Amino acid sequence: MTKIKIAPSILGLDYGRMNEHLKELEPIADWFHVDVMDGVFVKNLTIGAPVVATMKTKVPLDCHLMIANPGKYLEDFAKAGAYSITVHAEASGKNLSDDIDKIHALGCRAAVALNPDTPVDVISHVLPKLDMVLVMSVFPGFGGQAFIPEVLEKVRWLRSHYPKLDIQIDGGINDKTAPLAIKAGANVLVAGSYLLKAKDPKAAAENLRKANSSLR
Image 1: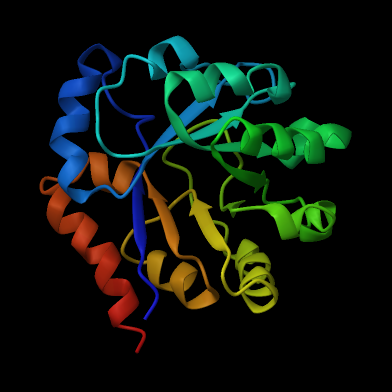
Image 2: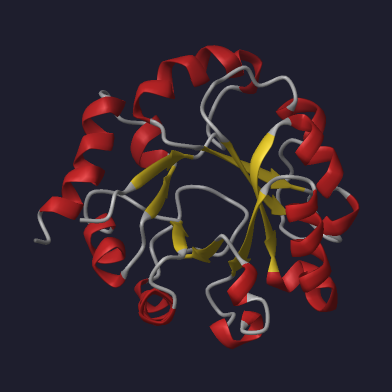
């Protein structure tokens, strides 16, 4: 059975108490999903590489760059401590292949994100050299949105054609949608509101992991 990785999104945390929150969440996290937004590519503004560099945790940092011209900032995030860097196919455009090569050259895992309305064939030319694909199950920018089930067809296609690829899904993940995502082939679940607003985040995380065993 495939191991399911849980990547709590830090989007809803109090950034003034960031390291305190990270410490509390470390027991349930395989990775921390760091949402980076520039107010240009998406209509929200969060944090940049200088804040990432202040994060004190042993859990790998999975940096999701929802920014225009991501290639200009890859080195900054690698130096800040990113374990994995995800760029959007829509933002990198014709530079996507070069951005992936640069991420690898910087010593990080390379991933590409697809918005809900972006087809997989947009990244067909780079799929063989990716460590992960992030399938967005909401439109990026804000937390707490409803899961878009139609994106699961992309997950199914990716899993059938690339059985060893990490497939991450982000947006509206909870104990109801996680089983759908896992059944389709996702093995990395990004969860924000479901975990951060839970009275017992540890129990909430276990509910996501149990979704895998319930499918046997």
